Amino acid sequence: MKNKFLKIKIKPEHPFSPDGERGYTLAEMIVSVAIIAIIASIILANFSEFRKGGDVAMAAQLLSSDIRTAQGHALSIRKHKNDVDTASPVGSWGIYLANSFDEYYIYGDLNQDSNYNGGAELDKAIPLPKNIIINQIQLSATGIVLNANILFEPPRPDTILNTAGAGAEDSIQVELKDITSGETKRVVVNKFGLVDVQN
Image 1 (tube, rainbow, N blue to C red):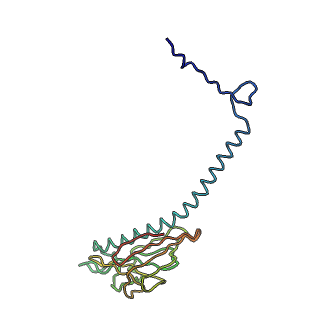
Image 2 (cartoon, rainbow, N blue to C red):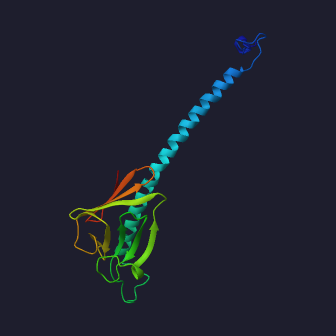
Image 3 (spheres, rainbow, N blue to C red):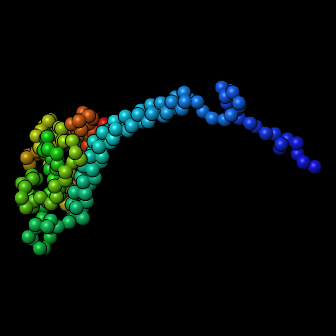
């Protein structure tokens, strides 16, 4: 015995078709394409805004990662490529930052003056992504400065935060800025060597 319920046939008919034929009208097609175009343009506009904010966030994460790299070099007592002392590594490892620069430097403090002196001390220059700059550097006691050092002194590593080798501060805030969108992110390092990325 066959099931009568399975024999139901659905014949889709278009309400405006004189012969009951299937199909879409030109007006329906135009409306559908317009809706898809509007949704696509909204998604693309939001994606480009999201990407702009993503560049400065990525740069902040890169800087915090490189700060931890310098900290790791000091912790492992890594020898600098230009260290001529063959017995043991000399000096600290650090990051040098300068206001309005679009790069920063990982360096070995070969002469142990707690300051970046360029030349032989440079280990690696790290360029920031396009349109990202170091907008502001602020030390906890000194305030806003033009340049700063984030140093890690082996073997513990002790954290030294200063400008031009002078004194030691409790914390440093480095503000990165996307010069096209104006969006900013801050990388904060305290005297215990903890690194944090903030809005």
